[in-house]
Structure formats: structure tokens, C-alpha cells
Length: 332
Image 1 (cartoon, rainbow, N blue to C red):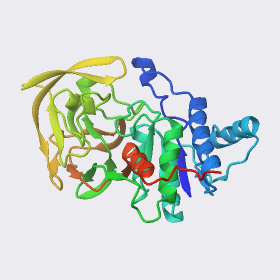
Image 2: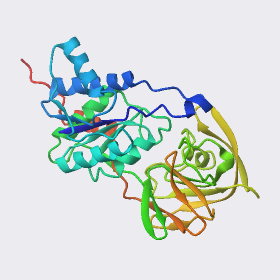
Image 3: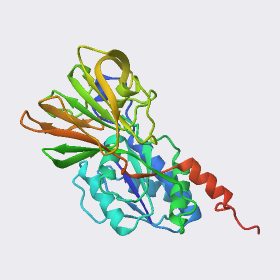
Image 4: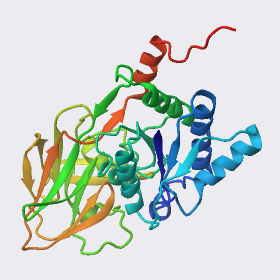
């Protein structure tokens, strides 16, 4: 059994209005799901469990396969009534974990994957990029993702499926763990949630990241424009913005939106190290969306952890599967 969590809202936030981000159409998500289902129809009778959604992506993919291929795929919905918000992804991930799913394919951006990672436990993820900020997920064709999920389903002794464990950031407020982020925690002096997404660099006071990639888009791209840290390096990075500046960089904070950023302080983060915010009040944006409010009386600390979710290394997995003959068919 594998799971598919597809967020119908990913790729549709306000950055379509204030930047040049394109809208990731839900029918394209249906097409991706359909290609995953075709793989299992041809090569396995394993069940695929879906998170229900307002767009009915599973039903549309099923109907397309019935119409085009005249076949049925072993699929079903997870047994819970969706709230039609981001908590659905976390709920679905927890249910798939408890039901023994071999992997979870996630269609969404950094925010969707953050919610899934909070509840998936040790179930490995195959995160497919269909959001605005896509630092955590990757661009892989749906058929290829289906083949990797097929390997996860059939790899009984764990010798073929290849995974790596990602980092995460733990957010502590007055000594209590209140939330986590997979890619970045952006500290702003905003006192409101509003549209959730952050795009005004003047409001950014501090930034904590697990990866700093010059080829990424979003808040972590600010760090990526200054230094480079990969997913597999056991360290993170932080910076504080404003004057007096030690450096100034140009960062792609949204698709087609480049902004200069003044950096007044920066440093590496080590695993288990908690760094206290110097900003006295504002909001924390987690993986691109405002989530946590803090006030002058609050003590907020950010900790780098190496115990984030497991992610399937698709190329390494498929290379190993091919070497072990998993795709070979008997000669007639």
C-alpha cells in the first residue's frame, strides 16, 4: 500500500498577483496522479490510498483511466472527512503512517510537505513539485515517481529503496516546541497573518534555513545568494537583515521577483544548537507562510535538527532496482 497526498491549493497563492509565478493547474495534478496509477495498474495490485479533496482529483484520474484504458486501479479514499485546509495533509499522513504505507507521494510545495512531514513518521516521501516555493520537493515525471513508489512497495528487505533523511528546524516558544519547518523560518516584524505568504523584504528581520541553494526560489534563496548549503550537509545557516550591513545580495524571493537584501550578521547552525531571536515581536513564516506570532514577552529559539523526514532518492532507487532486475519480464 502506498499513499498519495495532493494539495489542490498548492501553486495558487498571492504570489501569482505580486510576482510572475504561474498557476499550477489542478488538471495537471490529475494527469500526474493518472500516470502514477497507470504504473500500478501495469505492474502491481497494491492499493493506493488518497487524501480526499474539494477538486476530486482521485475520481477524475480514475475516470480518465477507465475511459482511455478500460481498466480499474485499486484505489480508495482515506476514511476521514476533510476540513479543506492544510490540516488535511497532516491528518492523511498520520493515517497512512498508522496503516503501514510503504511510501507517500506528495503533490505540493514546501508548505504542503511541511504538514505531511509533521505526521508521516518514518514513512519515506516522494515529494513532487507542484507549489510556489519548491525547495524541498523535486521535479520528476509522474511515471518515474510511480516506478519509485512501486519499488518501495516491493522492497521487502530494504535493500533496493534508497532514502536520505532531511533536516528540519524546530521552533521553541518559551521553552515549548510549537512547530517545525523543513526549509526556512523567516522572522518578520509583521503583526498579522494576512495572505500568509511573505514577499516584502523590508519586513524580514532574521532568517534560519536548513539549505541555502542559489538555484532556489523563496526565502531560503536569500541565504542561497550569500552562501551554499546542500540538503545532505549536517548544518544550517542563519542571517539577520538590516543595517549596518556586512553584505548586500540580490535574491529571487518569488518567481520573477528579485530584491536586494542587506545582511548585517550571519553564521552557521549546528545540529542541536538553539539560537534565540533578536527580534522582539512579529511573525514567523514557516516554509514561506506566516504561522507563529510572538510578542515582546516571548522567548523564541530556533533549533536545527537532523531528524526530519525520509525522502526517496529516486535516481539511486531506480538504478538499484534495474541492477537487481526488478523491471525485467519473463520471456514468453
